[in-house]
Image (cartoon, rainbow, N blue to C red; front, side, top):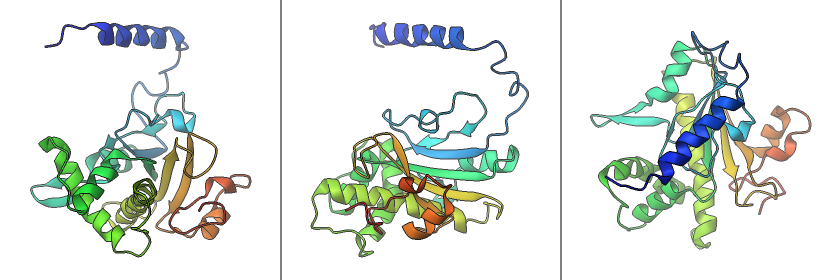
Length: 239
């Protein structure tokens, strides 16, 4: 095992600061249960703040499963099933909204794109499992006519990121395990200035399977129309 204790020291010091910053009744409302308003399926990426992106500073607000490529499913003996991290809050805590959150420059999408175009999986096996589940999504995207395969890799990958978010959201909308009462949102978290000039903005690209930016702009609260952007379907502000 490693002998460098710097990381451990930083973790413990950070937790001390966390404890010292909490008001006395910080956990009072959630000590005996949780009722998060949304389950946000994010990519496992250190650059994506799963609660911070929503400005959340109270426990019990966002249920935050994450995995490689913000995928809503898992593999169960060769059968693709909706991931338990998505289903648990919906079926056991009364959560009635899902947000699928991809991000610009996604390494999982990049790896799946490489495999889909003849490259090798990144390894090790635990990573390859998730990349392999993502490859059919990328292959479908490349055949969809929505991706300019002649564009540079960065442009292709960011469009594939959005396609994957749409695909994952549509999969939830079609899943029998997701009750009709549940709203499904798709977002792309942009920290690279791909969608606009506001790094850290979560851009809405899908609502209950709908991806037309004009339709989505009518569904958001007044003043939030600029949060609706699409690389795939266009909205007059993204090229």
